[in-house]
Image (cartoon, rainbow over all chains, first blue to last red):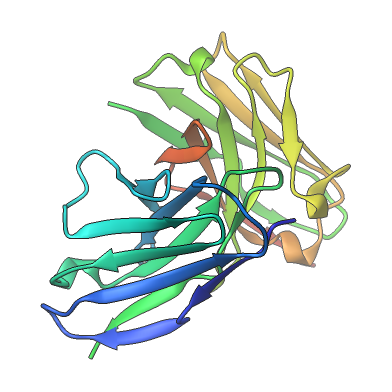
Length: 107
Length: 117
């Protein structure tokens, strides 16, 4: 199975900050990567697919980049509603796997 | 409006069985791949299984192969997950999701399965 490693596992940031989360795949997955946001007690929400395509309705302060094995999720100008846990997931092959998650907390 | 509503969760003893259902509405169910994803208490997300539009293709994570069976009834707009030989490590919230080219765009609210004696 392809392993996805996110870093950092958690971070503290302030409203207005720029935040970058990385996701590294154990082998190349082209651009078959999605990013999800999850808030406590809620189902995950798709933010980005195809490594860099913004899902409809998601604010433009979210962006994704990368291809192959290295990917990033960037949140520019962090808002209060962005404090959550973020997961990457690949859909290049089976089994699909998720990264371990990155918790974005208020500084 | 797309709606996915899971049901069937609960407390079951190790070695027991449980069947989860997911009722879909607001879209043409028979034209989408569907998935189950789970989340153990306080832990991250784990993809469990998915199924193609007609039910002829299914895929599973290794840890549930031979124990879980994903199926669908397109006439009833329903997705199921039959879980047998349950273990403590299967304790989790189980989400059903509607997929589009690999990614899960719509998710249900989840159903809690607790495996404990």
